[in-house]
Image 1 (cartoon, rainbow, N blue to C red):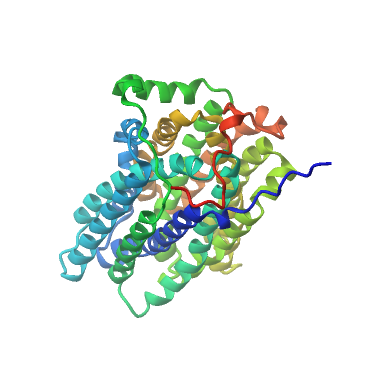
Image 2 (cartoon, rainbow, N blue to C red):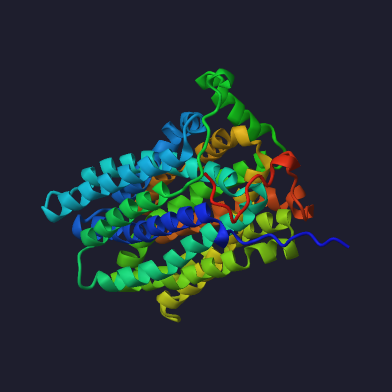
Length: 433
């Protein structure tokens, strides 16, 4: 009997390694900025709950304004070039933030402007990144590629905040942001080393902007299962953004735990993300592709409830322990959900629609986030941060129910509409040119 050759790991894929390293460098810097920027706003600029909501909104506003046309433009561009120039822009903007901060000219208005520009770069980077991977590694390797990239994110989320929290005791928040400038620059170097060369789509086959946007949106809203998934993810993202926009303020002011404790909490809880990434493929096989999406969507807000519980249990249990446990369990479920749903979307979508599909998905999902930051800030300002966090828990649980009571719970394997013959067009071990 002929035994099919064992598929080699993407570790041996030369070009994927360059993308992987570039992504890892970006994640290290981004985690430092995610830790240092809110601390800089709260501790150095005295930001209020409402101002923190505005800052969160500024960092996602471009997904609402540019999300749809960006998908069309990315489909018509060389995706590696989009990744490179997005990192260049982000390095320049963060460099300006550092310069303003160290010269004593920092302000919340400056952070809002930087947030908007960063969100523009992130829109193009994220859409190109999601659309680039299938063509780089082949569709049969998508799940493995997403798992490795998610594992990198989780490892960075574990190690970086802990180190950053310790460094903040001896260096200023702007200096940590400066590290992100360096990581983006080095990321550009590794992206430039990718040998795989894309071909621009035939311009004669391209639709005008509005019909092209409509094609991507139509695919999202008319495809069974995918339309339900995008609705649930959008509602869940609205509430989760409300919560995460206030976590730094909540830990530093409401619980008064300090910057070092914040770094430890973020790192320790993110260990769950590593475990989620390690066992994502095994869990998907065991539980089923559809069920794991539904169950992890429901589990995440249940685990998030530990964050406001830390306030109520503060006299019986150290809040730091409560936050670590809640974050650890929540990161497992979030990682399982992300790996499963992204891989499903990439398999389901025809290659020529990947940019527009990802853009439409991000537009619908991330387009809620600018409003969420403001709404969350207003609720926290009016009723308190703890009350707002309970609103997040209830809202996310309600959002997950349409997945739990759907076909997702009955499907071990999710459908794919991609023609099988184009699924594995690349050899993971080749130097693609």
